[in-house]
Image (cartoon, rainbow over all chains, first blue to last red; front, side):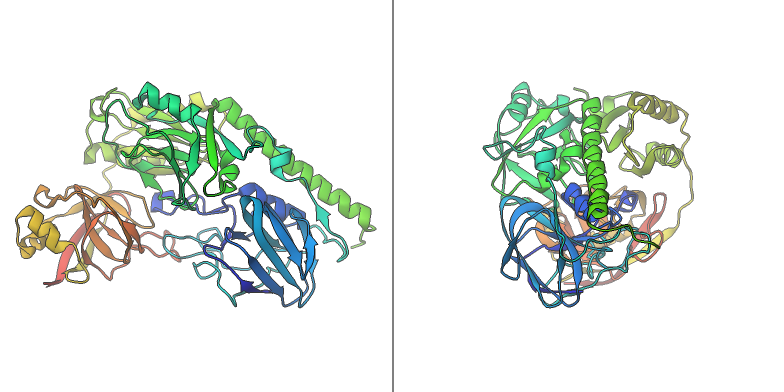
Amino acid sequence: MIEVLTVGAQTTIQDQGRLGFLRYGVGCAGAMDAVALRCANIWLGNDENAAAIEIPSFPFKVRALADTHLAVSGADSDIRVDDIPFSPWGRLALKTGQTLHIGAPRRYSRCYLAVAGGWDVPLVLGSRSTQNRGSFGGLEGRGLSMGDRLRPISRPERSVPLPPDETWLGFVPPYLALPDAAVSQDGECTLRVLRAGEYGHFTEAAIAAFWQTPWKVTMQSNRAGYRLAGETLTFQKTVEMRSHGIVPGVVQVPPSGAPIIQLSDAHTAGGYPKIGTVIQADLWRIGQAPLGSVIRFVEVDYEQALQALEKIEHYLNALRLAVNDTWDAVSPKEQT
Amino acid sequence: MLNDALRDVPHISLLGTTGILFEAPGLFDLETQRRIWSLAREAAGWEGIREAAPGMTTLLLTFSAPFREIDALKARLEQAWENAEPDHRQGKLVEVPVIYGGEYGPDLEAVAQAKGLDIDDVVDIHTAGVYPVFALGSHPGFGYLGALDPRIHMPRKKVPILRAEAGSVAIGGMQTGVSSTAGPSGWNIIGRTEKRLFDEQRDPPAMLEPGDTIRFTAQRVQK
């Protein structure tokens, strides 16, 4: 069990999301960086959908009220156990009374704190994610606050064994392991996009600007959507759209001409023209793009979008193997 | 570029690798929507489809895993639409008691003024309507309703308010609706109901379903 000592706004419990309830108006919620969430769960031998704490504001600090196995993934943050610096992208054993401090990221924007077994909050409509609109799921449907206590779900018998307390494991983060279209040296994040329904409604100048000019992530960006600033995207003619279902990644262009990437906490339906959809394989990159950073879009086709997803699965498979091998190396086989 | 209403063939477009959007040709009316409900019911059972979520004469299909045969899926959708008969389900009538005006309906007076009506007229017109539920979407339990009397159509606000309380009954353009959860809104809020049309602990969580009808009743009018 842990107690929250220091916490900023919009720090919530998230799993991979509440899928399959769009027809009731319930959006998917879920981790903004699902790759980081899955990594942290793999390191702990958890189900990859186990709930973790998504941390978008810093510092975040907890105290262990019992010996606890944790993993931290996501942004490249200053992490300390008591006063000892600790590598991000790894798992660690926190002893009773020790504190874990996660400071402001040097790069990227969201950290995930997972626990062996997953954080124990109720399953609501098939998910433990915090649903912003409707205030349910997660911890009482709200963000974490100081003094909150969270306990892990008891680990099932057949889960991967945990390392001895002295062992920590670090891993190659996905932004190194999955470099294609990744964040470049100058801090720009390139996102792969498939054309969407109203692509042909835009002027040639708008299409050119969309692909070729930089887009700044404005301060009005959050889990619902990233509002971008840049060129004004103009339409050949305005068309009244009927309300229709949308998914995270859809890039809508309201009459103002400033695109919005719809994300985890977006409304389930929209009526603005859609120029494209950021492919599922790159949604985690948006989740790690800080406010004020620069985004670029590059076009891919459906086949390339599927291949990009496969690369993520290969990376996660390799992690699973590495975790099992490492355990075999540090510990004799348990006789059960 | 064709206007939606002028298209005579469906428009099918990808939403990345996670979904596909079907937009019905023709007029925006209840009869077309009834065919959308049929299409939704059928497509929901197709292999690889996680969910079929109707919009306003549109249908979103989401995938349970990346869908490889995307062209075959498009063709199947087109064929299924050809064969889709209107679904004449008899939904339930849901009565929504509303306290109109005052602190519960802060925009009622503005609607009345803009339309050259008395507050009581607006309430009478709003409660006289019987509104079919076309689809659910936007936010939890929210129903897209048809047929708001044109005399009380009212454009959305230029700047949305950050928080409309749960139970807000509002007019946005040519639509009216009830929000069962609190959240930002650009609609004109004319009243509030204590009736909740969404409960995440229930299965299904939404009280409304497409094919139902809503009738608003005036519990009282505050001036």
